Image 1 (cartoon, rainbow, N blue to C red):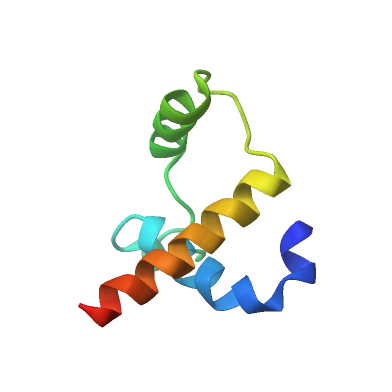
Image 2 (image 1 turned 135 degrees about the vertical axis):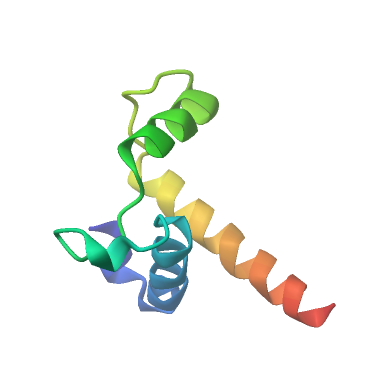
Length: 77
C-alpha cells in the first residue's frame, strides 16, 4: 500500500519484481513474476534473522529507493 503513494518508484518495483523472479516464471500458474518461497525465506533470514519475518512498508520503500539509485549509478559507468 505504501507504494501506491510513490508512483516514482513503480518502474523500479516492476523491474525488481521481474529480476527476483525465477527463470521461466511465465510457465507456472499464476503467471506472475513471484520470487520462490525458499529464496524469500533466505532473504528474510539474512535481513531480519527470521525466515518468517516480513519487511515493513518503510523498509520496502527504502530498498526501492536504494535500487533506483544503484541502477542509475550502474548506468553511469
